[in-house]
Image (cartoon, rainbow, N blue to C red; front, side, top):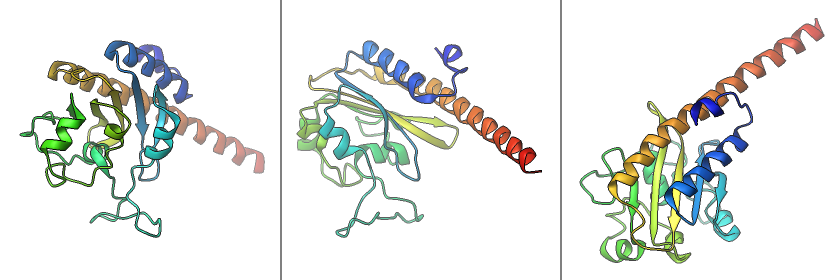
Amino acid sequence: MTEQTQNFVALKPVLTQILGKICTLSDCQSVAIRLHNNGDYPYYVHEGFPEFFIIKENSLCARDTNGNTVLDDDDNPLLECMCGNVLKGRFDPKLPHFTEKGSFWTNSTSHLLASTTEKDRLVRTRNMCNYSGYESVALIAIRSGSKTLGLIQLNDPRKDMFTLENIENYEVLADRVATVVLNAFEIQDRLDGIFELVNTFKSA
């Protein structure tokens, strides 16, 4: 899949194709990819999620009562919910719903909410996945080294959709997706440089 997509500059159709493969592989009703954008990680491509969910959950940034973005201790936007935990690397690998690499997964959001506190969940959770009827949820970060590019999200209303082996396979897949994203960004940067050079020649 990586070789097939590396030649594309337009990232959205490439990730849409990858998303379709993930949907088929996982048999999950709803899948999505978030990508970094100005400190936030909005949905870039998605399939199966209702429109109200995408609108409500598109931004992960915490807001104060005036609608202003809340900043963390490093003056970066504070990212809420489990997506924020995974993206920011806030996790305890000793907890059963996190992997050693920091991916989150649960086969029952109802059980998770009933058996944990907000302190256990490390940050304020919005609980929209559970409210929207999703029981099985998995969140896998897309990273290249220390750089967090985005996140793969898998949701399904059925319980018991995941195993640890599944999640570890998705982590491998996320690494490949990171390569695709970085290659697309690098190509775009080179194109931008060429266009700037052409404009310089025109104005000379």
